[in-house]
Length: 477
Image 1 (cartoon, rainbow, N blue to C red):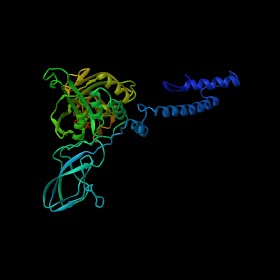
Image 2 (image 1 turned 120 degrees about the horizontal axis):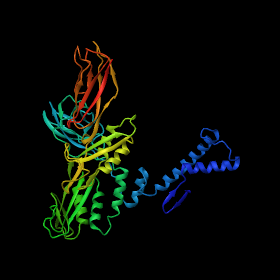
Image 3 (image 1 turned 90 degrees about the vertical axis):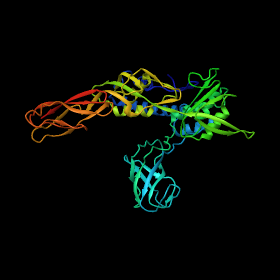
């Protein structure tokens, strides 16, 4: 096809078309018997010109696409969405209460000053948290102080793991977080999320109040999801518990109650009632109070079971990447439906060598696993953790193992990937232990052959919490 720009955008020639064009012109000049074999000097020069031309054409396509906010990326996208009076949502910090025990009066310095070192603690994984506000503690005892994660974005915090001091203070006796975070930080809005929000923003001034309200909610900083349901009937309540002629607003994220209340007050349909446990007051023009109601989303854990084969049996499958990326990118709207088609396509995108031969979704790790799964209530949203992605068959690496046996046996760590939960390792067939000490393998997969017999094969088995198993033979030399 030609290089042309029209209502469909900029279309450029392909590499094959460019190559054919150049070689045809060379043959017209030097004759059809010119040597244009792939390894000939002339053809190599042709490809240099072709690839250079293709680079320029592709750059022009990127420049042209950058004028479309649905195709622009990065900083250019930030500029384009400003035309719709919106901007990329910045990331937020995880806010975590930490209990500090001191033996004598002391002052701990926070982020509200820049002279002294900010008092910092860390969890078992090395994630650091900084004290928010400088505080003078008057006497020995326990104090609950508010800390902020040092890195912006979503920082997961486990209870009773923030126990390590980073800043040295001899008055501090112990550190702990007996409770979870006050609020979980949010990552900076991605290009995809920003494009989707820009598309919704065009409905803010539209005639449809429902779309307009959802778009206004998405524009509030900290809102990650929003859904508006409506009961237009006289049924009181309807099947979802919504009173007659009322709306039910569901949101998630860390946000300002006042901004959510104002969006609902401004955009809701006239005389529509509301449902929800979250309540805020709006002062109307005449000075009277108007009560606004909505609810926060409730999360619902989901499990995914995948049976995967290698397309190329000589190449490995990156199971960890599949599990982590699926959990990271999994996003189904509030009260939505998850299906295995989208998940299977995502697996292929993550690892092109992985072929999904069977898949299912469930509320329980034990199943039943179904092709599609709906939230159990309209105010719920699925959440997926990497641990809840169950991949079978279990793979064992390395797949070929040789160790030295005898009186000083050589040990080796064997690693399993896939399945669900903790692994149980066993020596299913112990040939090396015949006539001596038996072969052993501990809970971490650390295997030691027996001392009795050499030049044999032991069989090692791993089993997960669902009963899925895999075996490998180890050659004992």
